[in-house]
Image (spheres, rainbow over the protein chains, first blue to last red):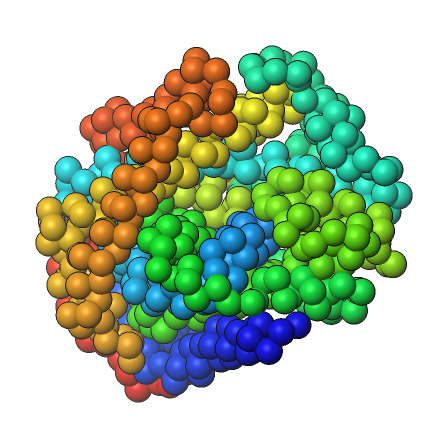
Length: 44
Length: 525
């Protein structure tokens, strides 16, 4: 692989997969309220 | 703490709901990650600047894809209904847009199942490399028994009929079982299996001789490509078609999500997870293509392909040549089956949910009333020796003049006709740490419609200039323009029918002034 190709592969992986990690961390910090265990809604 | 009122609880019991945020996110990822991620993205990236494509791709994801995902989420989550019900509650005359989306989903389900059936067959064919030394001749001749010239016939091809019936049986069972235990469970099990299987495929491919040449071909940047409008349109197109946005799926799914769930934060996870899988698919597919080029003693650019050709001609050739070929085959085609199935159930749920909301039907009855006719039409047209021709035409026209057109029209109607963006952005920001401010309204009201409008204009120009793929005019008129027009007209017939008893067309939030509880942190999931 050429150096340019290696760099672009690493950039793509870091930005997109890094973006996923950041998004998951952000979701876990979300302030939204959630249902209690006993109120988890079940489908019919 | 939950803020559910008895009325909201009752509605959820009636319509079905995802039990947690995790199930919703996995189902949404399951819908977004489909065949296009595996067989379309790698080629589009390679063909539009290679490594340089990441720039327009990210721009498209952040300025159009994810903001559009938020729009769908806002509609379904605030108005708590299937696509037609959500649009009707937004503004009564807009209901037709929802039915247009329902029609599109029905059409897609009919042919999408056929591709999954082929992949299912090929998962088993991989063990014996049944295509021998002529994958091309085997697929079109021996397997599909494709008729010599385009047309429509009803000569049943048993080899396609059997797997197609198996796929439909699985879909009918999933849909009858329901939102949580059917769709939710399919994705909760399917997505982790898909990721593990595809990772194994990527790792195996990376160790094949020639793999690095394949990656070199994919990632070598061609910066000059960024000066072409077509490359940017390709990036917006890839993001748009890959994320399952604009045709009712995400409206439907988000109506099954708890009232207080943080939707924008969930959407960011779904959007980046979808793109993460595309990058993974790009690496796996091009490592394998690099191997094939080396095995055949040609340059990588001579073996690249996409779509049906890549999956059912290119990959069988790789499987025949590669060490551990059967292993690669089972993982590749098995991944197509899982990715396809989790997308297919999302597409057909749009129809079932709408039918349930509109008519007074129980879940099993609505699921059967939609899935069985859909399966019959699917079997009639796509287990025949002319199936591939019809599939190619319907797929092309429903994508361009169904999905793309309805997305464009509904975006303009919501942003400029009804001027609903302030209400929708306030709704999403309510429980989120991602605040949808003026930037979101500009992206949805201006940038995304311009991008979609440009793509639509180009698509019209191409298909009006020359008949698509040289098919006979009557076939294009009937299955192409005809099917795209038919789904558009659906709303005119269905919108006037009254909703089932007790359905309110009022905005659920206008009669609901519940405070938002922010005392509990994190999700149970």
